[in-house]
Length: 228
Image (cartoon, rainbow, N blue to C red; front, top):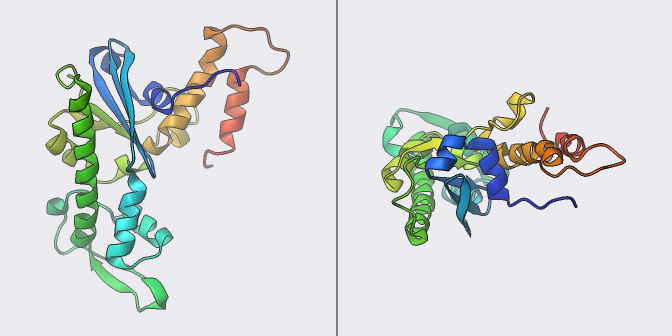
């Protein structure tokens, strides 16, 4: 192992701009079971923490609320999810099959949005509390950058602004040129950051190697996990 990289730092390398890191910004990487938070100020990490909640909790809530198997609940979340019920038209509907081979049910999209919004509010409130607990809440003019699969949900950015009281944007990878479709997705921020880290580590730590460089080996390895 040539180097260990904290996941939140790797994601930061992928989705944050140099200006954001210098001015002061929070990166919140929302995974399936956890949310990794990193606060960057003056170009370096000043605070990190992992919260025990993530997008998988939203999927679980949908499964319980709509009586859906986990895989169907995840698909419904991705295809029809919205984090702000008030912004969903009351006329919108979608059809989904529940447990036990029941007749497909027609679900108002606002009902799904209410389930998502309740959990998303909780997650964003936990992020807000952690920012305050860090003591750096007054040093973050660049606001919050969200990444991870949950960051792709419609309405998350707007809900984040309301709850966090800071500028909020959804991060897309800026770390690499090429493989754009695969690595620009917010859910691939850590992978894209690690790719960028692997590509640059040889120049940051020049060491003679008999085989392919770490950057090339890392790219070859990560291509196994990226779609397409």
